Length: 396
Length: 225
Image (cartoon, rainbow over all chains, first blue to last red; front, side):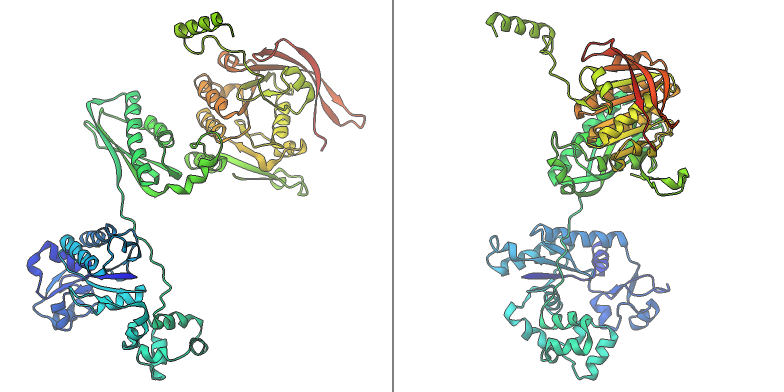
């Protein structure tokens, strides 16, 4: 079963968190009233006055003259969305963000051992979200993402709508076809045929529907039957892996710097190993005593995890860095994190697990020194007796 | 082993470290040079694995041809790299020696540092033989790089072959396990007038794995076009 958690648009939630007095008032998000922009979202009070998403701000002001207009705070919006997903991630790793910004899905199948009864689980989810973003969500539970979202849309706060799998068709039957993601042409065709509800759509056979509207429209038909083939794309909470060390007294000796960098690389590597991650970029920040901080970026062709690999990349860059003043702090931050299992087959190579393949080694050299460093040659014996014709050089 | 001998070894190891009384080295594995005469001359049957061998001699003494023959021979069994500092490697020449070009990586570094970094990385990654074609003027700074290079090569069982014009520096001579010096004796022609090869005097100047000082006149053949 899939649970859809529906909250107001994150921009709206962000505005409420910033200024709680705005709750219960007519609020339009998208820009200031005089700006030439469109409405991103609006509070229920503004909607009640006729404001809709996508309409111009001028128009919105005409509908709701006493409304408060605010621009979208992108950072705060992203934080709210992240908080929502991270909160749900505490319940289960099977969490996905919906296409609708205020919508998230989670699979309940793996929670049956911990929560044999569904009601306390749904109450706990509501409570957890309320504690984090100060908004009580509406919840819908069904066998597919589409149906659960529809259920959540029609649920009220504190009363989740649960659609059991065997009742899915009956539940969908009463809704108009507009709830399906139809394009204009298909909607027009269906209306011309008098098919205005999903129930009427369900009476047509799949074969007949396909014959009439083509293969592409079958997805719509399946949704109408309650079959949603979309997969839940699991959300991964962001991981920040960083190690930093103050240098007291300040260091101006590259030898000592290398030792500290290695110790930091060990810490970063341990964190990466614990998370099962590899990094494709390490950012070193050298804070200088009387000069601006010196950022150094080390990029890897493949996600790296072990200390040896990380330090092999870091060391030459550190030695080549143009340090102009003694260093007060060194910080290593792992960026572009990826699952380390990508390199797991490398562990099966004889000798040790840290040995990279020849292809990896060549890729690393080419990344560091340019693609022309390591080349392969091809000889075309049947070509004209000119060097350029007979020998073809290409990057390995 | 008698008890007294064991006791003596323990005493020595305590005083001078665990490596002090060393066991005799096991026979060193080798890679073919491509010429049976050279394999015999080395005394161990080819180029030693995990060590550095130096081919020295004046220009035109056949050392580069021999190195390329060795590269061709090893490419038939494994992956080889040719570090081409002067950028004058002719793949067609190697092809005529029967080299598998899909097993050959040609490294063309812009500086000694770049070249040595490539050798270290490739040796560690499992390349079987790396031939470093190093002109005399580019050898400055090599003495600092060689210990790291040899450590990697020994770890990864990689054979290093260094082709160096004229007299090698002291550092190279010190770190090389085998030094073969070549001197051109004569050109050898076929009856049809084509060049068959080069008659050279090859001398094993240094050999850590077999008796040095062996000298032989041999023919380094050129491939038939």
